[in-house]
Image 1 (cartoon, rainbow, N blue to C red):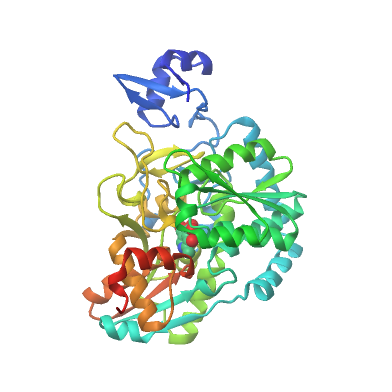
Image 2: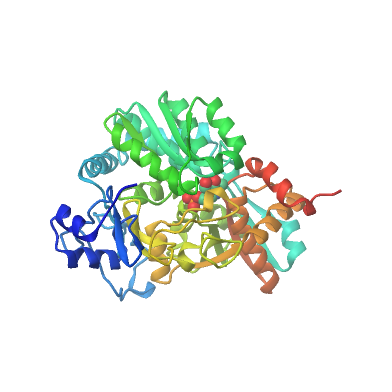
Length: 471
Ligand SMILES: Cc1ncc(COP(=O)(O)O)c(C=O)c1O
């Protein structure tokens, strides 16, 4: 990649050098590095929007606390029309892509709110996806670990085996209404890629899925699934060859094809309006779960939890509980340990930065560049996180905890053995937190979003953790 000096960039963007240095100190120039006492800025970097212009909100030392927010009306207030959750979110895109995203937002507000669209999506959810998915009381697991009662929201029983289809079918239906011919998507674990491939088959659209080579090897079963479903799986072979680079590659290609293609983003991340769209399509999880749990037990759970990669299953689960007297916990992957490069615990360890066109928390190297994320779960190893999670953390409404690879592995095998349910290794992170609570709390109930099933992880987990198998 070709790099430019501060002086060259200042000239190119028509700014003074001091302003460029301020932008660098705020980590707002994507891909910039500090080497031999000088900044180097990728020639391809885009000029950050000035946050002082209309619509670019920033409350630097946010005085907001959860007590200031009316969670009954929260959805109407956040995101703002320009895509902000407090200071997180927004849209930092080159003008041609901004036009494409504006078209998606307008389309979303008009088409996806129409009675016809809603009725069609409801029909798909019932007859194609198999919703509502049930909730289940894990009596064996609860008895084994202690006095806390563990319940699962069974998103693994969604057609395709993960929550991702809730969003993929919604976005693909929108693409159809917008007259697009192709779906483009990134994928980490292959769950979102498979969901988009299913949606493309259902709607008769072409489908290109970008996937890092490391993930393709680890999640070979999902690669085969996408291909059988008719999608083109395009290997991404630069950088860490995982989800971040898959997003980079998918974005780059979408920029060339946006007139005829629709970008199906798989998590509650990305420039506005994606965090909003993904949240809206995933909200069904929490709405169903709240009603089902009340019907099953007559009360609300003490804790609701979900794993957080980009944050789509978690935000889908949490939204209906924000206004209730329930503890909400997002569970991040601490991987092999606290050191940067060994985990993907973005909220726990990240700093504010613009990455992939939105402002949120990002894992950073010492020089301020986005760090390589790691997790045993391909679907969780992203160095950023959805802006709504960064906001809910900041205002203190949601608590974010982390579990290691090994804790997730224990949960993976114990749920399989004690309940006959093999969880996705991503979802096993949320379950590991429930197991931790079972060891420390005397009583209580915890509702875990089991975001997906673990067939895709079998080979990898057997090879890595043979000690859990009977010899
Ligand atoms: C089963 C499953 N759960 C969770 C995730 C994490 O994504 P998100 O945080 O968007 O729910 C993934 C990502 O691929 C996944 O496959």
